[in-house]
Length: 179
Image 1 (cartoon, rainbow, N blue to C red):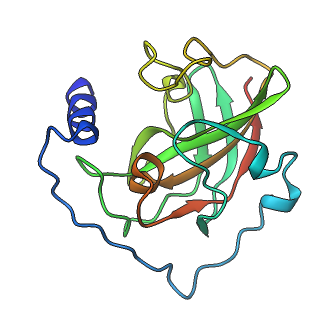
Image 2: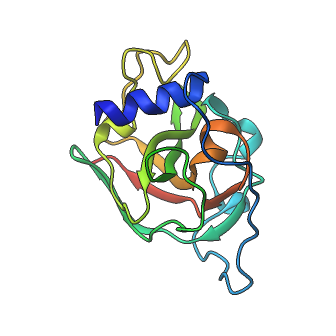
């Protein structure tokens, strides 16, 4: 895993050769709209979210559905795999997990905090934690998830979540409380 993380950091900082071209892929015509809560039904407005890592995903196309989300001390798990057609960011990773939560009365969000390989429907709790300040900027550098805290989780194209470029797509947003 450390090797994957080092490759990813090299990719982001430009110290590695970029292997994929910018490609924007339209969602397939047969994509079903989400039945999960989205924009108007969420307890926050996307414009209220302080994005502590990455940019807002509010306008990203919702192209698939995740469900049955649980968050425990072993990490988040859900049902529903992200599209295999998304281009890889690095080492077969083409998706990322992101979330929004409320802390100290303020909505904060992370557009992408951990890479996902195609077919992954889980992540370790480190997906929500800051590692030595690498992930989150101040004042959230030392922030950690707390049991009983509610998260609004989504899966996003890794290239969109980490780099803000195509395909600008994500899943629906699913609510879960850290148990």
